[in-house]
Image 1: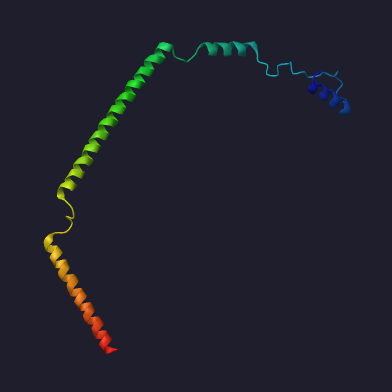
Image 2 (image 1 turned 90 degrees about the horizontal axis):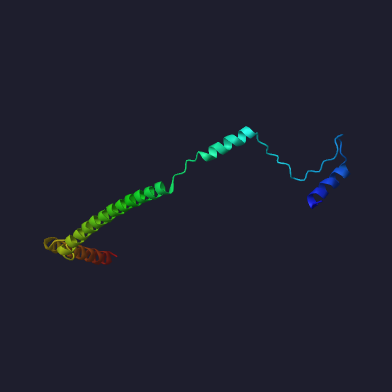
Length: 133
């Protein structure tokens, strides 16, 4: 007797069996998932009709997938080259303009005059405020 069977027998002896049937020890050898012979025949028939593909079909499909993948990679490479060329053209255009092209020379003179006027007016204000105090 195995450990589990001995334990089950001990449990039955301790609790007492209320059934009038002779004590049967369940040894786990009985198949609890019984199916009819018709079911087994249908199961075997369904296993024979497989939806799997042959090795040649698999290799042919694999080659087709690789070709599609290669085409997609070629397209992405071409698009990246075009994008890089566009960025290089924009960069060359910006570099050709030179440094500090945001302001023109005439505006620069006006800005200096405005700054000088602001400084003078603020100085006058400070002097005036100190005199009034």
